[in-house]
Image (cartoon, rainbow, N blue to C red; front, side):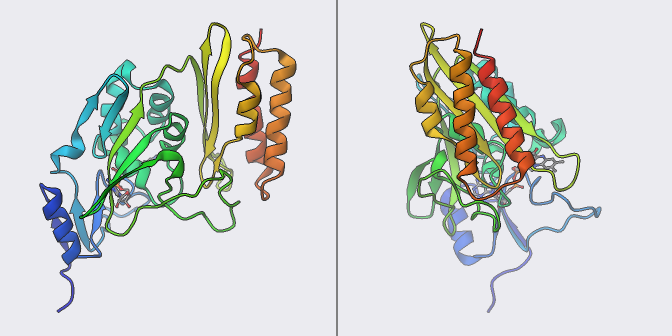
Length: 290
Ligand SMILES: Cc1cc2nc3c(=O)[nH]c(=O)nc-3n(C[C@H](O)[C@H](O)[C@H](O)COP(=O)(O)OP(=O)(O)OC[C@H]3O[C@@H](n4cnc5c(N)ncnc54)[C@H](O)[C@@H]3O)c2cc1C
């Protein structure tokens, strides 16, 4: 007998979820559904044969806050996170505000965003910058993984290999993202930009710049771009740490040159993308000068 077809499961516990999944291995986790049905022009959307709705798993809707962390269940909607206000690191809020329109953000979940299969989702970029951790769960085990080591998809063919030099992990078979843990550290200045395309083949992606300032000394900095790949030059960050603020213009331009060298050493990428990244970094660094 073949696997059951055209079923929608609404498990209320992880035990029932994984036992449905075991019996129906082609079932697809369904969160807000906005990515699953995206780009479908017809009035009746095409859905996967078998669906595992995550909606009734109460634990996935929870938001908790400790002194050090904000923990967000995978089924929390993007609009709910934005509505939390000041507790949410600004870089993440700016990014979530740029995803779809209000209707999409009222349905779309943070877990669905991080797990979308096409490329690094918008939220992955601030999550990496903020040192977020993801809780992943199978029927038998739970593991935590750093956002910087997680990719929901294999690298896109034809794109540069993943330049961030860390082994990365994708979702395993019948594995769910269940929770996101974001450290609540103070970042003192930040900029987030989403590159949008006016022409179909223009490069897109999100880039974040955040710094920590202690007594007018730059004590930490993250500059991260993401779309098909994640770009981060830790050498440039190390050069800037310890510099007095406001930043000297010479140091700012020196770091821009380091980023140019970093990009030039990677497998080729579109000139327009390189130009957008360099412009963003230059203007963000100049924002720290007198
Ligand atoms: C008009 C429009 C504009 C959009 N704009 C943007 C944009 O600007 N930036 C952007 O990043 N996205 C955008 N999206 C895509 C999408 O809305 C978001 O990525 C959204 O956050 C996906 O969340 P969801 O809950 O709807 O995921 P779903 O569509 O339910 O799921 C997405 C994928 O993740 C898997 N999945 C979901 N939850 C889990 C989980 N907990 N564990 C494991 N796998 C899981 C599903 O099986 C599916 O493969 C847009 C979509 C629309 C319709």
